[in-house]
Image (cartoon, rainbow, N blue to C red; front, top):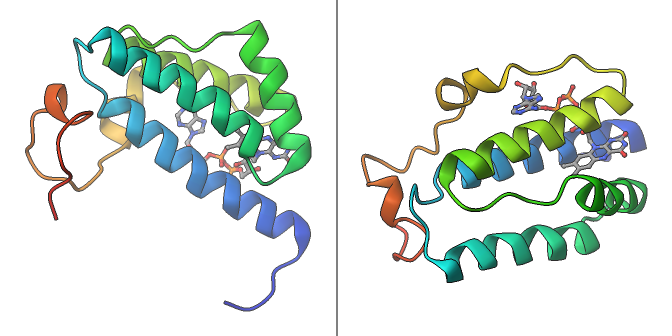
Length: 125
Ligand code: FAD
């Protein structure tokens, strides 16, 4: 890949990361175990420490304190992430995304596997 400008690279990283995060929450089980809920919560806290854009990571850590991750079900996680992304959108002067359009906007291409079972099963190819 040719070298991009800083702003372009940061935006490209952001777009792919959001895509991954939304797809992940939308494949989270409807009825997760306590362990699965805790794993997702821990994931977001570790993610916020490790995200490569330092400023973004610092803002996201602050956001997690204001709006703690909701991981009790697929929809609570997906809607929480949608709200969190909308908070970032607002800070960056971007439009609010309609969270009722999540399911039709993200497709993991993982086939018809039951989303209830994906957090603990081996991924299919
Ligand atoms: P993006 O915000 O990247 O969104 C990609 C697509 O997702 C949109 O086109 C839309 O189809 C969809 N979408 C938009 N909003 C939502 C939503 N609420 N729910 C579901 N889908 C949605 N950039 C900075 O300059 N400063 C920062 O501090 C910063 N912090 C970030 C923190 C995190 C955790 C991440 C992942 C990214 C951050 N970014 C930051 C990058 C920034 O959020 C954008 O990704 C980047 O500016 C590209 O924006 P975009 O307009 O292409 O759309």
